[in-house]
Each structure stands twice: as C-alpha cells, then as structure tokens.
Length: 300
Image 1 (cartoon, one colour):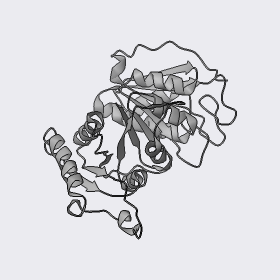
Image 2: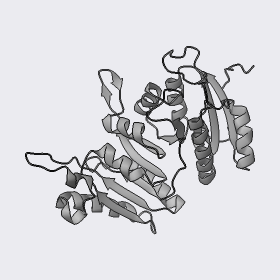
Image 3: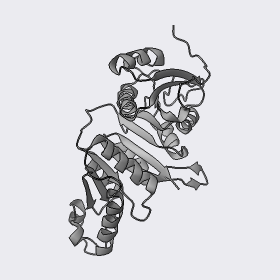
Image 4: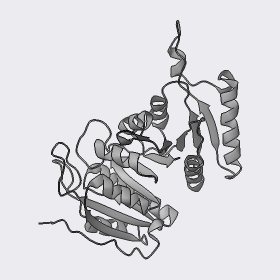
C-alpha cells in the first residue's frame, strides 16, 4: 500500500526559481498538466518538479489531493510519473516531491519557489481533483506568481496565443508573458480587448456578439490598443501580432477567442476584500468555462 510521506524540499541542482512545478493527484486533468509542464520545461531549459500534496484532513464535500476520486487514473505517485517523464523527455531534470498540508497553502508556497506553477483544471461539471472548486480559486486568488491551468478533456489546439488585455491596466507582467512565449514558440499572438457594451433604451445586443473592426470602434480605444501593441512589437521583431476589439462581457469574449488557441493569457489584479484575497469575477468565469490552457498572471 502506498502511504503519504513527508519529505524535505529536494535539491534540484539548480536554483529553486529555475523550475516549473506541477501539481499531481492522478486525475486525468493533472496528468495532462504534467505533460504540458514537461514540454514547457524542456522548451525553457528549466527543471520540472512534480508535487503531490497529501491533505490529512480532506474536505468531505470535495475530494482533494491525497483522496483519489472514483473512476480516475491511480497515478498520483510522483516517483513513477517522474520516471515516465524522464523516458519521454530525455535530458529533462525531473524531481518528485510529496508534502502534507492544506492543498491551496502548499501550492501557493510552491508557486513562490518556482518560475511557474501548473495545475490540472476540470472547470465546471466536476468536483473531483485538487484544483476543482474552492482550491483552484484559492490558489489563483492568493498567489502572486503565474499559474497555468491545463484542462484534460480535449486535445489542445495549436493556433497561437490569445492575450486578454485590459486597456485600463495594461500591465507589463501580463504583456511580457504573452509576447515572450509567442516569440519563443514562433506562433502568432492575438491581443483582445473587450470593453463592456453600453446597453441603453432601444439598444440591440446583436452588435456586441460580433467582432468590431478598430475603425468602427471608439477611436481612442483603438488608438490605445494599437499603441500598446506597437510598443511591445519592437521588443519582439518578427512576431505576428494582431489587435482586436470585441465589445461584450470580457469573460465570454475571452473564452470564445480561446477555442482555437494553444494558450489564453490574462491578468489578475492583486486585491483584498473583507473575506480575504479573491480572483475577480472575470477570472472565475474564464477559469470555469475555458477549455484551453489558461495562464493567470497576477499584477499590482
């Protein structure tokens, strides 16, 4: 029988910040996230850290790490998974680790020690798996470091990257993540701004459902979007970048745009409420409905 083991942080042979950490619980979604993280680590020349967290007091309402849901692959052992990844990714530095603790807290700590934290994402329609429900939202809301959520239900398209840009807060961290990754992969980047449509007496919702060309959009918005793109395009020569304005609900427009993308990138402002950190309505909506890998980049 496999028993949880509390281990000390491993010596990665490199600075801890030069690793990609991926959460592992044996679910289909977490195994998809391992494959995605292994490919990303190899492309970036980083180590891969497989982390399995045992929650000694799991929530009886929602199975988490260490509590294997029914009808899921029983492959939560990071050691055997590490061996498999070493065979499929020769030369990749892979380490396996097991820790006990409250999952969201442990995962947030892992994000602080890593270049990137990668988690499996089930979205709506399931409660099994450690990133479903409150745990996923807690990690995304609390960490100050990038998190990528990888779905496990469908093949990942490979038609470029979509960046959801809030022109009122065009944060450098978010832009840098999207531009640098698109440049590294040699894929096109679509920069999408989605202002809320103005609804008034007699207004028709139909125009909000279709893309609006920059010339037909508010001139100032179009000018601001073009200016941001041009500023960053100079730093990444040869990168194919297009801008698009799609009025409507931002979450809906981002999910629609992500259907054929290999990655959706969006920012999350660090914010506090009386109840503690929270991820914001747009982030929550996209997390629940997106079927494409989603990179959430926190910023001030």
